[in-house]
Length: 324
Image (cartoon, rainbow, N blue to C red; front, side, top):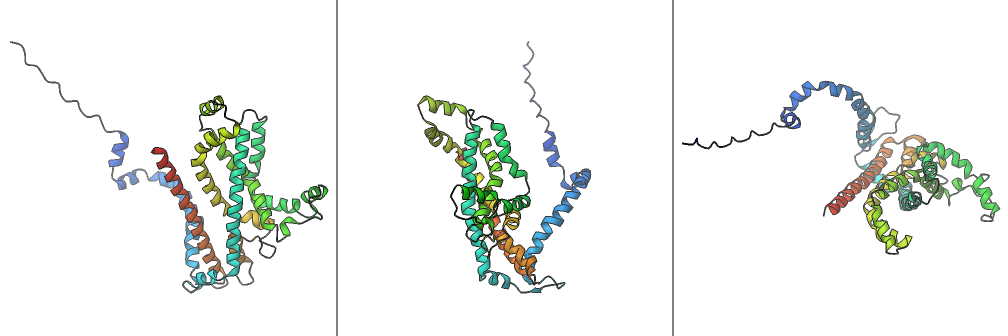
């Protein structure tokens, strides 16, 4: 009689990975066992708390105070600073300059950087590495230094005026940084020139994601450079366009160092952006108004947060579109 058939034993479940066992460990026990990790992170926590978290929270509290800066404590006035701020013509002038800066400078920076990236991404362009380095150099230069240098370059006796007068484009020299009609344009031009390199790097990275086979197929179908860019390259760059534009919009709200050293917000507040308005109200006024300046800073922060949320929503929409 043959032996009964023996059924195979059920295979034992594989051992849980180390990551799963670590997740099941009680949090307090894990903290006690890895306390030394936070010891190394303590300097970063202290620095971030002292120079970022505390000033941020303090500015929100100061916005509700009438505090000239000389007294030890300010007087709580509730929303009076915000009410007064919304009726301040100089605040709205600074807000309008910041908005105009945003509308003009960002398209110039994004579009100019895209043209440079397309040119420097082509294999037919000689010395591509050298030109990329030269265009990127202003990015690593301090904005305050660039502002001081360009006050000399854009001066009535500077090289820009000399060239324009020699080419008969100007009848007489103009101090572009000290003229109410051109001061904001001067800040916009210098800012775009300074940050053009980093946006160009963004576009170059985006262009590397496009398969070269698509361009070759377009050229086989006798598509010219413009048709190839319009029907092949540009549609694939649209997700990157949203992200890069939003990044540059946030950067366009942080121009204090460049604008303050180049024009100081003048003449006659013609180039004063919100950051310079806050600085002037808090530190340059005869009687400092720290509470009032903090209220302006809070509104400026809310504007920046709105742009950051727009960036997050834009990125999320692009990701959902790519997954569908």
